[in-house]
Image (cartoon, rainbow, N blue to C red; front, side):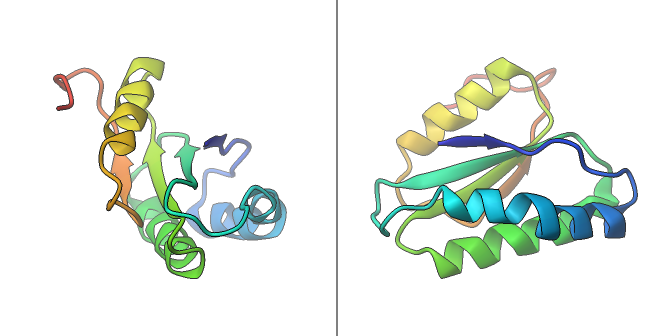
Amino acid sequence: MLFRVTGLPDEPLAAAGHFHSRILPDVLARFGPPHPEHGIVLAFPQADHTHRAWRLAVIQGLAREHAPSRVNAVAGGTEAAIAATLEWLARAPGVTGQYWSLDAGRAGRVW
């Protein structure tokens, strides 16, 4: 399941606070019973490197808390790049707790 994260402030600390207080409850409501085939991919807007640490910590924490359900995230990218990542994840059942910055301009086909 793809969950699009929107409306984050530009400043990293404010963005993390907004995510935890306003968006995380909606994310948590999407989880069903833990099962390896269940999972969620959060699609964050593109951001600079100052946002990577808090986003990765969120994804890794959710992945640990909801195992064996999988939790991953992408940032930026085109719709095609997001779709290719989702397709790849569907064929990679062991991948969880990961955060990728997408760059569709240089990406090739994902095998």
